[in-house]
Length: 140
Image 1 (cartoon, rainbow, N blue to C red):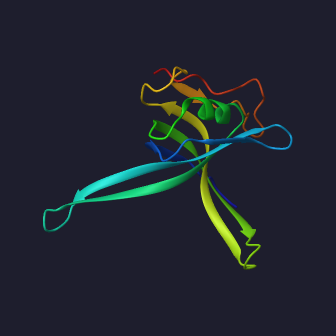
Image 2: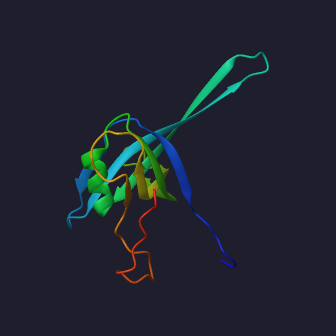
Image 3: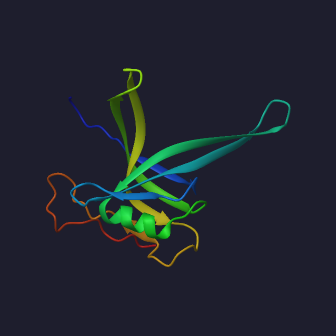
């Protein structure tokens, strides 16, 4: 692939349910949850219309543990991450299935639920980045 590319997602929304925190066989924390975002507009007749979009989120390691501890259904958060598509074969039908999810790497809690720091960044270093060069703390 020639040239630069960008795969970055930024969302502000509310959790649809409590995060599901689990651990891989090697002990790595993973949390899964969904975030709802919405939009409102007036149609041509002046009626207010509303649409909700649901986003499947996966976070890993320390960020997963923080999400599992402090986030609850309804929590309002800012999340940054990247889109990732996975595929698998459905055992019942033999059909190949696909899902696109957001792999989160930064999160800010926007409401006063819990008492964790407002900004949380995953401690996983980016590929080819020295492990001691984590992301700077956000100034707000």
